[in-house]
Amino acid sequence: MPPLDAAVSAPDAIVAVRGLSKTYKSGFQALKRVDLDIRRGEIFALLGPNGAGKTTLISIVCGIVNGSEGSVTVDGHDIARDYRAARSLIGLVPQELSTDAFESVWATVKFSRGLFGKAPNPAYLEKILRELSLWEKRDAKIMTLSGGMKRRVLIAKALAHEPRVLFLDEPTAGVDVELRHDMWQMVHRLRESGVTIILTTHYIEEAEEMADRIGVITKGELVLVEDKHTLMRKLGKKQLSLQLQTPLQAVPAGLEHWPLELSSDGGCLTYTFDAQSEDTGIAELLRKLNGLGIDFKDLHSSESSLEDIFVSLVRARA
Amino acid sequence: MNIHGVRAIYRFEMARTFRTLMQSIASPVLSTSLYFVVFGAAIGSRMGEVGGVSYGAFIIPGLIMLSLLNESISNASFGIYMPKWAGTIYELLSAPVSYVEVVLGYVGAAATKSVILGLLILATSRLFVSYEILHPFWMFGFLVLTAVTFSLFGFIIGLWADDFQKLQVVPLMVITPLTFLGGSFYSISMLPPVWQKITLFNPVVYLVNGFRWSFYGKADVNIVVSVGATVGFLVLCLAVVSWIFRTGWKLKA
Image 1: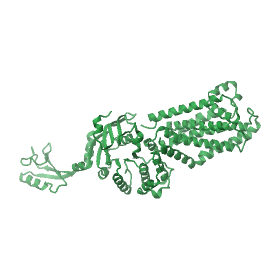
Image 2: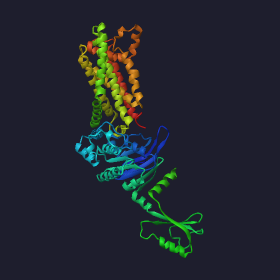
Image 3: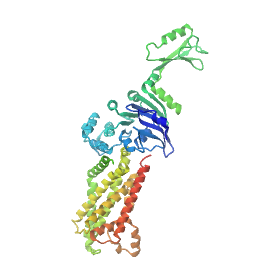
Image 4: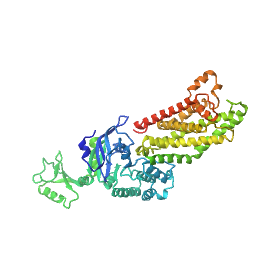
């Protein structure tokens, strides 16, 4: 049972995952006590390397895989006890292009809507197909479509029953630029209509471009959940490294209040600054060092990207 | 009850039948016609009556059962195996449908096809031999009961199978021999005494005889036992399906 305070701590959570673990029959532990709240109406990106547990997490929430421990609620409905209400709210676009080869686009979308318990609504389905540029292909058999078109069909199927929560599992893997662009636009449109979107990706730019919040998962553990802007501020930091001519014992007097760090061998001085600010302070620092008679033989500046943070997080757990 | 969901699955499955009309309907009708030509007309004309019925007419219920069992099993097993094989099962598993609704959709469609097929074979056989149906209500009852029961059995096979070979093995290795040895083409009173006893362990004997009774009012076994055995098997299959969906066996990791 989840602790009660955890369950009530996030009243705006539409998906609440509590202590979720999954061990497959092979003994592989795909998820280790994951706690996660997805806020109503947000776009949440779940970032992680292959095999990190992203798809397992999504699959449990959607009812495709049974969790081993823990609980999940969707808009207050437990996914096991109250699966009808929970699943009616969810749309899933799977990673694999699994489609019915012989069905027409129209038939398969109509099927999805019915399967999820909604009365027929041809006008709504037409709207979805038009938005996804599938309307012209509505009578085509799915097997005659390109990979990108099949991906669109899967999105149309997931949206056919007007879900309130949409899961996109690696939506842009192997997708061309045009479709990626269309998809991003569609995701933003859906969000404006109040749909909560959870996407998994290993493309960091995608998370940056689309998400409100980012979660990093690796080896079945959620190691970071952060607002994208907070994360971007961390990313905005740049570092200037100075290779000194002669090693120092300590940060020189008069520079103590500067964000400086001396390497353990004393041969490298690192200055951290905000790349976005007007005055980075570099010029003044160099003048001061000159005044103190500290010479350097080389310098370079570097930027920590989301990728660096991501890689260091993942490495730290490896 | 997710009626829209049941309807969606049922329509999807029926659409699959009509897409493969040749395979689903035409080929069983054709093969049954061939049986009639060979056993009914060519060989049957040289055989005497069985229990007061011409041989051609005698084999009609058995032939219908033969097709009904095979088609019910293969239709239903294929229907649920395909989404597993193609990966589209994810949608079914993530949908707000209970196993009862899934079964109603898949098994309902498979049984509908089988009943249509049975009636078509019955109509086709009219072209070869004349027959009468003493108890039309019971005849239709047996037809529906058998179609539903064996579609359910096929559904379980489809859930269990994880390759195409397993899908074929039960119909080929179990059902076909049992049907041929189940008195489709002969009365069990024609067998040597030992085999008459052994054959009573073959469940198909009860199906064929119950069905034949509805045509000609005569059966080798007790008709109540026939109905009871079929209903018992139906209940067993229902219990198995309910267990599979509760545990997610072969469906969910």
